[in-house]
Amino acid sequence: MANARTPQSEGLDILVLGGGVAGISAAIEATEASCNVTLIEKSPTLGGRAVRNHQYFPKLCPPSCGMEINFQRIRKNPRIHVITQAELERLEGVPGDFQATLKIAPRHVNANCTQCGACAVVCPAERPDEVNCGLSRTKSAYLPSLTAYPPWYAIDRQACVEGCHACVDACQYAAIDLQQQPERKTVRVAAVVAATGWESYDATKIANLGFGRCRNVVTNVMMERMASLSGPTQGKILRPSDDQPPRSVAFVQCAGSRDANHLPYCSAVCCSASLKQTTYLHRQLPECKTTLFYIDLRTPGLLQDFYSKVTADGSVRLIKGKVGKIEEDAATGDLIVTAEEALTGKKISTRFDMAVLATGMVPNTQGLPEGFHPDEFGFLTNEDKGLYGAGCVHRPSEVVSSIRDATGAALRALQCVVEGLPRG
Picture (cartoon, rainbow, N blue to C red):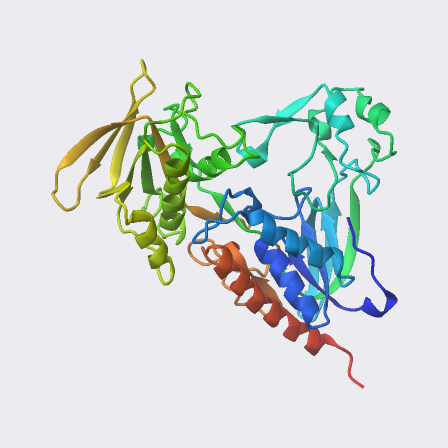
């Protein structure tokens, strides 16, 4: 999907990889300085992980309002050229003059789409919904999200029934083309900003915490989707084993983080995110008892006020101690959480209906070209001129910090544009 450009806006671009909050912020900030931006996103919609949140902390507001403002700014900005379902295939050249080859996957839906949904109604095939962490399914013809930009359906051809064209027959607007093929496009850019975001650490690797083995152990990312009205349970927080509301929930901090066997670093946002998620439970299920097991509660700066507000009424029980084991009572689905209290040195075992693992952030650097340099933890270092990381691929950060970091990356990229302009 591409925004129209005026002839006056043609020129040397900045290429931004990733259409999450950091990529969008970098693109918008660069255009404020009269630069052109090509913004590519590998999924069918902009928004990234931020729009999958139920609420932001510390204000506990939904992400949709702020993201919709950004979408409007992009929609009205002729200097931003948006291409979804696109990835950087090859990068050649030098800072100030790169040639980027983009590979664009077919969406099979064009700008005629009105979001009527007729294609999904008649579609006989289903696919796991990656937005909802596989906890629900969509049709092969699906709307990527309620706030999708571009605001069109997409078709997952790999999930389609062979020979089926029911969606084509049902569409009144000639919006579906099942014959679309992959494309390649080359753009000349002065700099590249990688805002490719993060992935949640694979909780199945933390065998002692029971994810994938104990039915009622979920991750913090899954919990976020459960609380969302667009999530797999339409906003109701329920135990996966029996679809019943939990009466007690354990929040397990540093699930794999600050651990030499998994992620040796702190992901910076997990403590505040878990505190936020306790408010989801207390608002929806006032009688639910929540316990947060932690090594250290890290809520720096203004987030300390958020910590104080959430914990002031004593509704969250805080236990300083690392969880060593989670086991399941097969008869009930209940969980037995074993931890060592750091302050007393005692080993405790407590029964809970459900446990939420605060898994850490893993930088998503897969597919980035040579020249981007990761540090010992995999985060981009921004050492090379012309190639910059922004947001959570640069360092673990919450939304506000990611936006600030993206602004800095845009400023560095603009310097390459200025230096690459012809003299005379």
